[in-house]
Amino acid sequence: MSSIQADRSRPIGVFDSGIGGLSVLRAIRKELPDESLIYFADSAYAPYGDRTDSEIIQRSREVTQTLVALDCKAIVVACNTATAAAVAQLRSEVDLPIIGIEPGVKPAVERSLSKRVGILATRYTLSSAKYRSLVERFGATAEITVQACPGLVETLELPGDHSLRLAQLLDTYLQPMRAAKIDTLVLGCTHYSFLSEAIRTRLGTDVEILDTPGAVAREVHRRLAEVSALAQCSGTLPSIRYLTSAKDLAHSSAVVSKLMESNIVLEHG
Ligand code: DGL
Image (cartoon, rainbow, N blue to C red; front, side, top):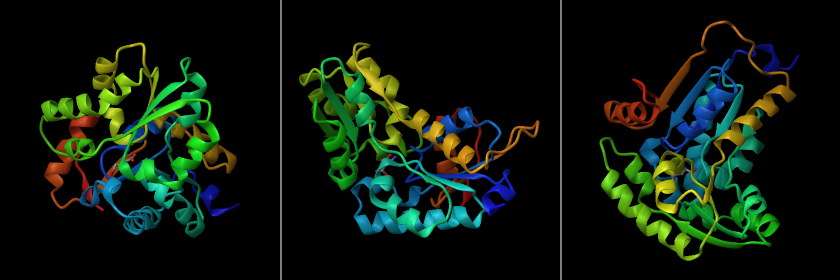
């Protein structure tokens, strides 16, 4: 029996540059309610989307090592930017299932009737080789309008209500999507999941919004089942620990509690 099967109750580690990956954590909790989870928000280094390759790889490596040291049985890179920059490197260094996330270009092109698709993501993701390869493989039959969204991640990471600033940024970034008359919009950054209602209000119900946390959760399920490492039902709800690299725990706890609609206390990671 390999070590991954030896203790199926080991937690799954999930990380993002900040709070965006909580959208993936929520989806994993729903898909796999018997699993213990550890979430790492690398908020001291957010946003990743404006950083260099080597900075993102270095941070992804350090966070992954923290999660491995906490005995995680799988690592979920709940960040499109870190997946584009670092997932191949992490897979070559860590002997655990490592599941990434990428913009849903393929499902969007398949579902779009008009074949006019929009993609919102970070600057880094949109200029990455991984994204270019996605578009080459699956985007050829569609007209794709892309928009980088600097400012959205930073604003979502702030405590308090910043709906006015978010509304201004969304109005600006969704304008090219309206002009292009898209019928399908891909959310290519996990932070943007928390804005899907505000985006829907602006684009109307004729535009389908495609988000990938659910698909990632199903992939985590499939990968753990493949190696017989799914937790068994213990009758009690397994734990979720929240770690952060941010110095100000009160600030980070407030941001996470608001998004998760629950009182959450973060620990230093
Ligand atoms: N949430 C991240 C993503 O999915 C990145 C945000 C950032 O730090 O730039 O791309």
